[in-house]
View 1 (cartoon, rainbow over the protein chains, first blue to last red):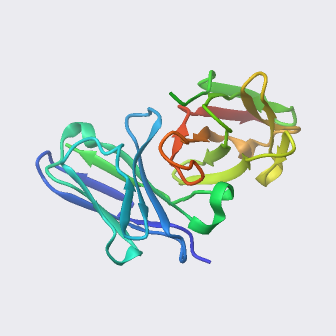
View 2: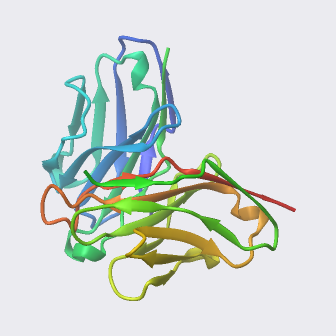
Amino acid sequence: EAGVTQFPSHSVIEKGQTVTLRCDPISGHDNLYWYRRVMGKEIKFLLHFVKESKQDESGMPNNRFLAERTGGTYSTLKVQPAELEDSGVYFCASSQVQAGPMDTQYFGPGTRLTVL
Amino acid sequence: AQSVAQPEDQVNVAEGNPLTVKCTYSVSGNPYLFWYVQYPNRGLQFLLKYITGDNLVKGSYGFEAEFNKSQTSFHLKKPSALVSDSALYFCAVRDTSHYGGSQGNLIFGKGTKLSVKP
């Protein structure tokens, strides 16, 4: 079974440009989460999808960030326009809705975003 | 507010010696606790979790963790460290403050770098 995949693995862009990150969850996982680790600090939650619906987006830093999950499969996270402080590693994770309290979130390898 | 603390930025251990990576937590309600490991240039890998039941939880790669409710701790342990265990270790607790709690997001500690020397 394939794990969570993320694309690209690394992105270098200039301030003001747009970047779109993609996450493909484990097949059959309805929960999809985005997290971010900035400058060696804690890994912080961004948002949570259940299928195509945004369950919780309380961690999104501002309206420059837009996440979508059309059709309840893969998800994209767009940053527009990118700022220097957006640099970091963006992780995606997925888990089964049916698992309830036992659910484990499985993480992808992350996308390292560098904004110059 | 719910939180996780990893008091040590780095832990150094000689190969073959036991290791402990510390984690304390603060939650309202039942704690759902997790340990993840990140090897260099890799993503987060799940090690083990505590949901309920036995206080000693066994996980991948010979790791185990002891849940202590009175001390609000969930320390990660291994009886005999390997050089290949050198990595960044994250403790996390499920955020149960929003809804239900069973599928809430994770709140992470800042991570502990484990270095195992031959």
